[in-house]
Image 1 (cartoon, rainbow, N blue to C red):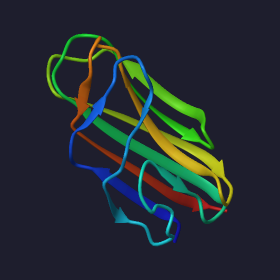
Image 2 (image 1 turned 180 degrees about the vertical axis):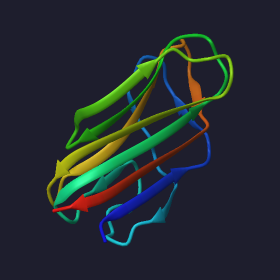
Image 3 (image 1 turned 90 degrees about the vertical axis):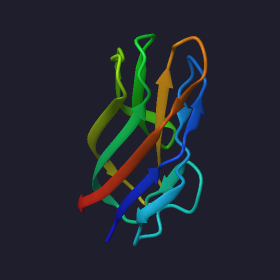
Image 4 (image 1 turned 45 degrees about the horizontal axis):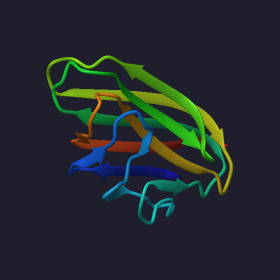
Length: 130
């Protein structure tokens, strides 16, 4: 089974104005061995994949927040929006074809003018078929 569920439950400091890779701290599911550590997962079975990610930010009304997927270092889907004055969870979903050895990364962006802690995040990748 080619599926993956990675999480980050501790804060990660995100500098202003720079897309930053989310560094995952644990895997809830990874039967295909797609992730070992760090921010990148590597595809082990070719096919059509559904990617889903979420990133939670603290309350703020300053700047923008972004979330995007990269395949082999190239952005393939992104969402950027203004924050609300409450804790905010951004979510992104995308379907894409991937080959063995392709790498997957999720990145976040904020532009408040200072560092902001990402409070939690998750990444799921599920192979839908060949």
